[in-house]
Length: 117
Image (tube, helix red, strand yellow):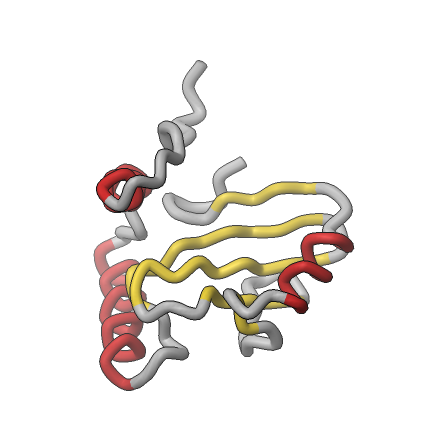
């Protein structure tokens, strides 16, 4: 199920995933400001194309941001600009662009969900 253009939500028991995220050096936990409806917020430890995973006891929401706001002044500024562009221009991370960037790095992720059958 899509929440917005870039946020994908899954439902189910998240106990094991949360335990893995808490033990992972690839993600930082206890991030501020989880998205509405979620209690946990994890951010991938990379400056660009950073995965954000919001968690609750019954589901997760995954978002990939071009800039990680927790990775220094330049990425934080880039994130602010992206958020403002999303609010003002009603745009969000384009799943197809993210897919192309990942494929360019040798990571095949399939086609973005369009809601069409």
